[in-house]
Length: 240
Image (cartoon, rainbow, N blue to C red):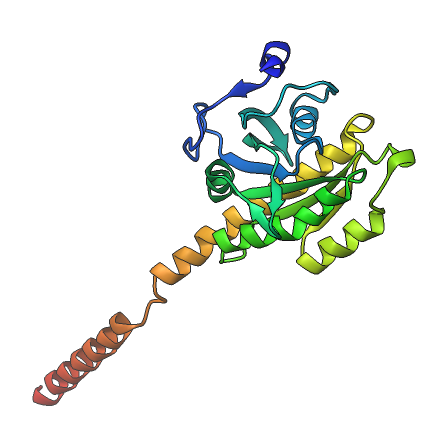
């Protein structure tokens, strides 16, 4: 892939790597999904390198990783770039690679292009598929409307994306990957914060459920022993 040759700052890691990187930093796994040609690869590269390249070879579904600082914590962010999906006979045409990536992910970015209404129509189908794979409904999802700078060919208005995101319970960002890095960063940043928040709260819940609240058998035993000692002392005084 030409991207790898030009972007040596992005390292590739095998799918399904452990929860900690080689340096010991916690890994956050994010899958980027959406229709063909919406700018998924450009979005990933923009986030990881701050640079924009407008020409890419067809996406083969690469996994990229880079260490980043999020609120003072160093994290190894793994981003799975997935091939574009389509709707086949009113249902989502999902390949095994997409399904495996969604099962693997800690969070998902659903991307559509404001210049392609069909990519917008994919969102609800993708969201439904994600929730089927993660029925616990804890997987954070961000919906990103890309190519906001192409006003002359826009087919989807921003409020439509926002309304759909609100209905699905997702965060929404409209971005121009080619013009603005900050909006792209914010979309990934909010996911990282949400995952970190869950990672902090989950161990506490598990600890609470696994370690029962201590009762007080020792206190009852101490009271019993105190009464026995007191009775013995009274008997001793009485005998004298």
